[in-house]
Length: 281
View (cartoon, rainbow, N blue to C red):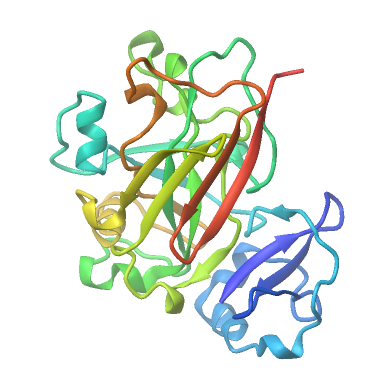
């Protein structure tokens, strides 16, 4: 099942994408797609819905972030060997963790407003897992059982800010709108193995990133298990699992986003997000 939220601010509705690619309205079943709907019992209820019983959304509607109130956004840095190499950084011996602010979360079609004065904003397409079951010290072989589903997350990064004052990863990755998510949350039944997915990202129709989750240094399950050794994961937590090579900062010369650029990013079975880069007001 592919869950979505659609509409304009003030009239966002829950929906799903059926097997034929049609959007259907879920508002007769739930008021919104929130963290409370991710708990195992509620999520099982959603998975049992017959899409054919839902009304088709006839008019084209903009898409919002697939979950209304996502909690923590935990990210794994340098989790693809070839990405670490393109940045000239050592291969990590354990997952490198950082967070993005809640203010960074945006919809898959929202405009990306560059921070004032930014000339080094970069892109990073990533696979993100959304937690449905709480857990602490989760064994690797049970980690995927704590996942509600997967979605695309673009770990947008302001490189100069990230490097400032000895290293400001949180600030460089947490500007408003720096975590576009979606277009949909895809249940684990449709993604039985998250380590066999292709990722790609284009800027203005030109391919920049191409990769596969098969080349992760630490698998999705290993990332979840490692994080849960140190804190309790709760429903609505997002774990973004790193990016493949092809980021702008690793190119010669470096290439960064500018107003007017259009970024398209996709992952196998998870759809595609597309947003335009605009200058600050």
